[in-house]
Each structure stands twice: as C-alpha cells, then as structure tokens.
Image (cartoon, rainbow, N blue to C red):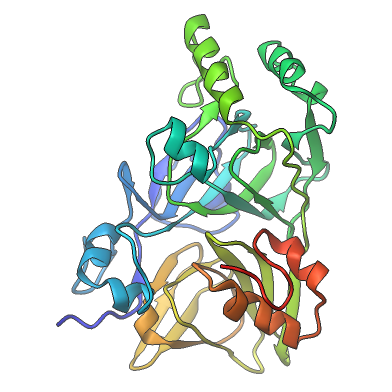
Length: 361
C-alpha cells in the first residue's frame, strides 16, 4: 500500500479581465504565465480545474484520485464523501471583480442541481490604501429595490462598501452578494464548487457585453438565490502565542472550512498536531515542512497537502504559512481558543457554527 506523505500541488491559472501580476511579483510565485493572471487555483477538486500532485511517486494524480484510493489516510478516520471538500485560490484583483454571489447549500441543491453551494472567506494579503469590497445588501433594501439597482448597475445604492486592510479576513456565507478590488490581493478558501450568478453587463473572461436576454436571465436566478440579511464584517482574527516569535492566528472558521496563519521567527519552530488533511500555502520565504520521516521544501506561494495520517508537523522559521482544513469546530477551533482565554462572543466572530466552547460541527 502506498503511504501518503506531504505532496506539493500544481496550480491552475485563470486569465480574467480583472487580473494583473501581483501573484508573481508580490508573492514570488513561479511557474505561471507572464501575463495578467486573475487567479491561481492552489488546491482544487472542481471538475474543470483539477489540482494534481506535482512530484514524487504520485505525480500527476488528481485530488479526486487520491481521495478515492486513500480516503481515511488523507482525510482522517471519520471522513465520508466522494470529493475533496475545500478549494483554495490566490486572487489578484488588480481590477474590480464582478458583483456576484454563490448559492448556499440548500439553494444549490434546489436550483442548481449541485451537491453543495459555496461559502467562502477572503484573507487580505495586500490592499492599496483606500481599497474596498462590496459585501452584503444594505439594511432596509428590499428585493424590488435591489433588482432595480442591479439592472441600473448602481451597486453602491444597495450594497455595503467596506474598507479592506491587509491581515483582515471576511467570512462570506453562500447567498451574499459581493465583489472586491481594485488593488487587492486575496487568499480565498471555500467549499468545492464553481457555481455563481453574476449581476454584470460584461463577461469577466474578456470584457465583452452580455446580451440583454442573458443579463435578464442571470438577474432572475440571482434574485432567487440572494440572501438580503447577510452582512459579513472583516475580522483581524484571534491569536494564540505559542512561544518566542511563534504565533497561531485563527482567521476564520465554520462547518465547511477553517483557515489559520502560522508564523515563526528564528528562535523556535512552529509545531502542530492534527486529525485531518492540512492545506499549507506559503506566503513568506521558502520553508521546510517536517513530518515523521519526511522533510519537504515549500517555496513562496506554493501549496502543500499534508495527509491526516502524518498527524504532526514542524516548520522552522522564519515562516509565514496559511493552513486550511475541514475542522471539528469544538476540538480544532473552540477548544484551543477557550484555553487561551477568548470568550464565546469573540470566538463566534470567526464565522458560523461557533458557540464558544461547545460549537456544533
């Protein structure tokens, strides 16, 4: 039987009209085309953008194939499912993203014939002064007024415009109308899905005009999927200091994913134990990730998938690494934060399904 070790992943790229060069220039990512890149899909089991193992004996294997062959070794003994549940991306909003939404789970099954919707979160890696995001419908706006403003492309009349700053995170439930940019670089974590409904009169692939009939049909579906009551707020996260220069920052958490940012200086390494697959994305200088019997080099803006069977890891500093995973909210998120002294109302600001020391998964 093949024993799974940490696996570096390939990244697929998308060249959309709002992209630029920040993923290569700001993050130091190599191996991507030298033109305007809007997104790199770092860890993906979406059918049209499958991530594969980059090297080693399993090189070329997709996440779907890995999961089918090694479900418990990859995800842990309690895992059930037929596709990898988490999608992660870098997004370069040198321009402005279209105003759009993704259905929640119930709506995706009811209207889109999909197994799940797409709740997501944005961790702001860089933003120019004055950068903003549209996120959620302004309180008091009803469906008729929203529809009229979207038809007129008057987004600020009905959507909340929030300032965004590097280091902040927004947890964005399915059903939330949103956009961000220009001048914003984001790491996005979300449910595995590519469903979306747009409110724009232009196509994000090439900027061409959307025909009137198609635009009307898009708005019809969007209005069936939007949740007028969702108004996410940015959060700085909750930090636990583990040692001299070693921090574990909880950025967001909910039933579909959690995201943390790990930092270590040169005095002591970052050490961590875990029960499910860890998606490590390096947003700092090159590091080495050490698991039992294996040390793996992780270059800037590369992603490493660490199977549940590894159970523990160590990262020597200087290090600045993002970690996404499918959490047991009580064990993986609430328990360490409660032990660090955080009250339930602060823990609940990280996302949804968190109720202090006894959240539901």
